[in-house]
Length: 286
Image 1 (cartoon, rainbow, N blue to C red):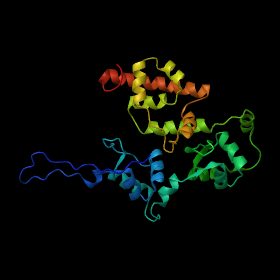
Image 2 (cartoon, rainbow, N blue to C red):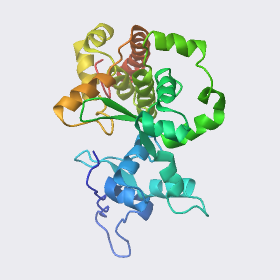
Image 3 (cartoon, rainbow, N blue to C red):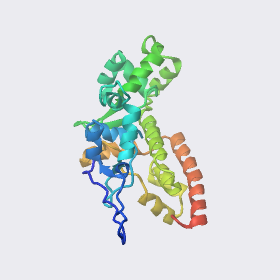
Image 4 (cartoon, rainbow, N blue to C red):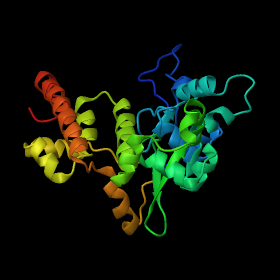
């Protein structure tokens, strides 16, 4: 959920004497809230939230309330990188975050039928960027429109003809790789947004079911630290309890090989986090 905008308080000079100016923050150092940042980039609040999720726009230090804030220098960087001279305003940036929802819309973007698109998505050829839960409590997957266009240009052969043997095997087994592919993408995006060892371990821990997490992290004190640092649900996660219960199942690994991968990755991350705590005592059990 996007937060109301805030701005950083100007720095106040201590004991400013004659001939000395009070400290005033440079314009590039001013922090603004999500709503104002979205407006300055010409994006809707949902488009801006997607840009933050994808790492296109990087958040600055949060407000005391925890609300996200963004430095004007970062907004200037994004404008310079994403809206080069000659582009129509924010069209280039908006094109990067545009999503399509559901198989029918995504199939139209690819120029194929919904059944073929569903097969391509279930077999892991395409990775969702998000989800929503409809009124029937069914998962509606969201895809980046730009990625669909890139896929069609890169692999036109898969858009026609019969399914390859690997896809036929997956479909015969009623496999659906969309949740796993989405989780992998989501975890990767979260890991790229922090260098803190304990926070990175918390991202990996959050994907594990409770039983597997207890086995991977037997120390209760460490589990408390990881829970405190766990990332919030992703953008678009429903608030209605019935829909949230459906969506929450998407957040956890559910296949043995996927669980094993996250357990192994968490083990490596915890080794680094414990080493940091032993060296500095900054965070986590020692």
